[in-house]
Image (cartoon, rainbow, N blue to C red):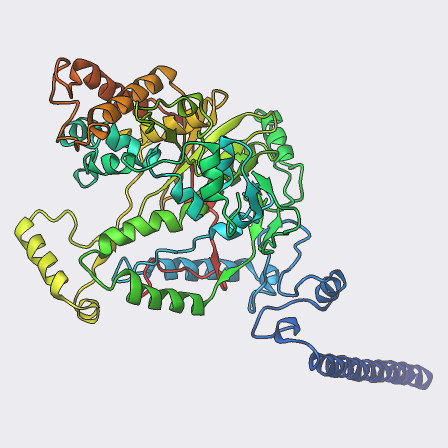
Length: 584
């Protein structure tokens, strides 16, 4: 009995000694681990003193992992541009988002709810519309890997053919000079009489756009550049240049894009081969494919918004009586490159081998322009035309399509559409008398209005699109039109060439030159429409059939596809927060 008690006691003592030794060993390991962490932290703190803020982990600025920074330093690339090996979502990582992948599903959902909550709080009215709202500038689009830009006008020193004038960019003074005396797409609709009151009513053109043909009359009365010698003398002076490109001048392009690594060709092939199967394994990595041809790296900063706000106050909207029209005109110009990028991204998904090319004024080398007649006194009188598409889409098989984009302005006067015309007129008079500060404090001038876009081409744009195909040559059989909004995406349309309608268009344009421009008589109201065939300005039934056919062409356009709002690539704000359409 005594022996059994001694054995039990010995076993208990052994067990106690074992647990005591284990606890001591664990404490020692924790102490060593703590010392190691402290040493590592001290080492990082010491090395951080030699890094700029964007390189320091957990900085209040953009963050980078130490290994990524080291790789970027070895490649000589800026540290604030993150190389995404997966070709995924973001090219830049911001503070607070470094551990985004480690967030729980509840945290991710909460972040999405916060962003939606911020979007819902965005103002729907305001006094200072942001004309450049999330717009990608043209100089950055020219640096896109799938966009072929034109050379700078100063790098061109000689034109070798009439058609070489298409090398001048549309933001150059040479491009402006080519419009004098030439019937371009901006004046064709007016010269055809489609902007008169009666023809415009038949076509459903808004009253505010029925400006008549007087502007086209004065444009075509100008002196045009018709010969190659004249163009070289005027456009290729010592300060400009213009066909042959100087080799010794290298153009620097901003590094603002990173080509997407998503293989959409494999994705399309996979989807087509598995339409009727249950296979779910994609041919690329298990992640959401990046939806665009390249990632746009710059972001919107608060200082950019403040600068635009000051510019809008001092320049654009100093007079509130003209503010609505200025806003609508400037919106289309500022957002043009963004809409061109929408077409580029869409067709790049269809075929990644496509290239979108910048182009100037086309058609100077057309036979009808070269053989324009002369009067007996030597002065030239023949009709010459020209067209400037927003871009050209070139497919791998050599096919060309003209590209035209239209951006629908979301800003309208707040009282637009008011049924009480007296109150609306009184409000307009008050706005004319009010100063900028008084208006800002009193009542919001603009509101956001965006209506669904019908998949049709407005009749007033049919002459423009047909003339673009004509000026690009007989091989251009169609034109792409992108109608884009600010908040509800875009619609992509295709209009096919109609050579019979083009011949009829040229007939009426020559009639305008003969009846009005050459005679020095401005066109009367509703010319071509009111008069019979026997009169000097007559159009009769032939002209009315032409107007009807124009409307039919616009409605018979081919619908290519709808692009959702998320499918439009725009500039992101810092931290991907919503950006208001108003600056105030």
